[in-house]
Length: 391
Image (tube, rainbow, N blue to C red; front, side, top):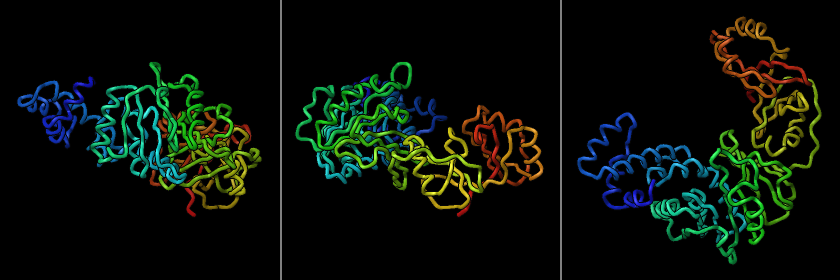
């Protein structure tokens, strides 16, 4: 999208077109475009339809109400922080007493919007003119212009003096896809860390797979999941953390800290199997959950915990195990057939078997359900059968 085409959407005619496309349906696009081009320039119609598509794509991240008023670029939708995660971070900043923050590499404004809604004054900086124009339009559309100042500049040109906090969200994608080396981010992690140390508080967004050894000294590393899916990792600066790692589970905001315990012991599979949340695993906090549950690992390299008692925890999903068997397709098919199992949930950890391929081979039939875990038990390929535990 060219910036001229985007700016045309901000005119009265562009807004009118976007309003007509509020109920846009891809299946009707050809007929709709033909009709609209009778009264509007073809280029403007194309830009409006493209924006309608992007708004639909943005709904899972921003919600229907905000997405319907906001503006996006294709990369902006892909890379923006989802609202639930941005709001969590904004609450953390607000709780630290932050009132003025520099949002570096701000994109289309997802984080700036959440920060402003938390009462924080934001300087949002991005170097791409189109992205800046989109972000500025979003602040206006959501009534946040008084709290968000948009600046189109390179982040290394910004004087960070006078800010209570800095937030940096480096680009982690390149022409070949995701970037795994933190020093290949744009800007590099080392630059972002140096910027973070210039303010009383700071947060740096990094890939969830960042090696633990790459976490700078004095930073708290937080892994955030939303609805069970790990969304990001953030490095927090400003105070020496009591515990170096944190796992935060949204939407309820449960947080677990730690990172200093030794790995749990390995023991036999007992009545209950616990599947830790992905953020807990990424944060290397499985030992903390095991301690809470009086649980052990089923294998030294597998993040499944087992315990004799059912205890409530937000940090792991419990299952009641009925069978622990060496892996065998024939045996599994016979068991499922014998028990009338037609719905099979297949989970795997430490197994090369593809769940969908196994499901096709099983061809389950019946009214009952079962969860099958393909994993290792003390080094041996195994299958565990059970169902979600109620407690």
